[in-house]
Image (cartoon, rainbow, N blue to C red; front, top):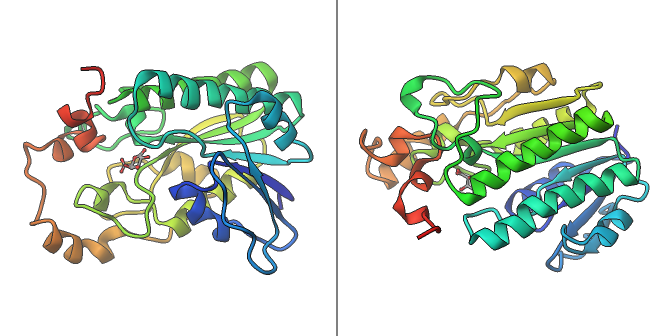
Length: 270
Ligand code: 15L
């Protein structure tokens, strides 16, 4: 088992869901966030670091004695270009470069479905490694994250896995998420597979549960050893009732992987 794991963005949505789920006997979680993190609970084996992923000196210090990194840090929604460039793109470079300098050989990167948001659902199941079609500057930053991961794997022989996360919440929050949901428990299963698989090199995998309404390949994730156990269908009746039934076929959510992110509400360039 991986002994010390650095988790960036540990105070964010996914980071918070993973904090308890990735805890294990004999493992230290080094949790890093730009914001102050909740103090360690009784018996919790964590080290807390407050720093920005854009700060090379801080990131090099955070890499000391680390076996693997899970990089979740960065803006998780669309933002102005300068913020995306600095925090998401430059920040990911800083994390990978700090890992390389400190001899950390494995990095798991949080990519997103928005790296391929303009993929049309009518084209069928989204395969692993489907070509980038970002829907926002945020999506562009996830394409850059994947490219940086590929570079560090090829050039420096690091193991880098980019997880194109669908929607990781306790429960699906709308009808689209019945297809894109990754349960927190499945998220932890997938991250554990990413941490333990032997010599993966560079991979891109979908981060979703085994949803009845899923549109995503699970082949590459399963090849890492991921065995999803959850299915959003258990929430379907409740979600459909709350949100007025099945998706309108002409809606962004029905048409594109990225859903409403493909529409005008997410156009920050104007
Ligand atoms: C993401 O990448 C976001 O960070 C998250 O907030 C969700 O909106 C998710 O995608 C999604 O597409 O549901």
